[in-house]
Length: 365
Image (cartoon, rainbow, N blue to C red; front, top):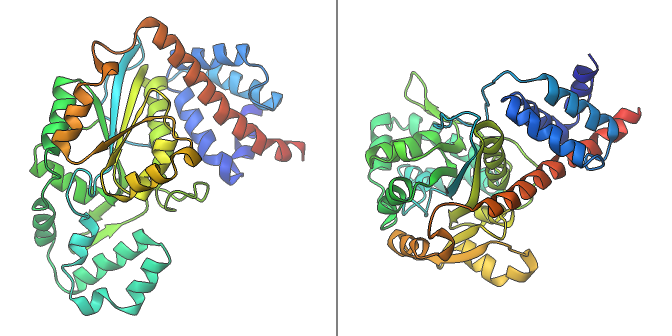
């Protein structure tokens, strides 16, 4: 009862609600995950910042050992807990990274110019409500009787950034990378394009705004999530948070640990995830685009820890990745894996401490 009471209390706090849900799901993943939490909590008794929260999390970890399904993303991994797996991860933006254009604007341009330049649409764009803006675009397309088939055909015909189909297949099949997409496009556009280029099976997970055609043929879209904490990201998608949660979930749920994480992008909304990367990771920015310009101009101020790779196309990026000294041979040695343990546990401690700090005033009441 005490545990449930604490969780209900924390769930009332906006910043704590999501973290508690995430940790509860992760702890339920299995006995091995619970053991990780217990071992770390015993060695770091002050890290949670609030002893009552520390005790409750330990109790939760010790008593919850039944598997559960996470709602964060649908992954294709099927390993489960067991022997530790050391792997490498590449996370991709989609628009102007994998595909050579912005999928949203390509579809928007199917409307007459007078509708695109209308005051109502301009106001939505200026208020930075991009998902709401695109929802209105899709409503107008339906009103203009643009059929679903034409929208899908338009998406399939967007060309790749040269070399990216080869890059994705090589990383997944030859270099045994895990691959994910984190994009502010939507699930219909991404799935349609990947199927057309025989890439659907290459990705472990896709994180984007959910979309669907209703029974009348109107395309509907909604935000991936709502957030106000990250000022570098749009309200509907913080790519840094998504990447962090995926890496931690892979560790706790499947015992997969990434010795190197590559993030490949082009825009300003790709800054957040690379600033959360470690010194052993790689920030891959497209040459001449906003991400590269921002990182180069503000590199010292931003305190970027990851190695910076500048790429022009998929062929160029693949060659840079293939010759990296860090990737010669299998993933991490045993000593490197020990360092990964320390990094991982420190990250769990940082998140738990943030939850405890938020909970302390409410607990006092």
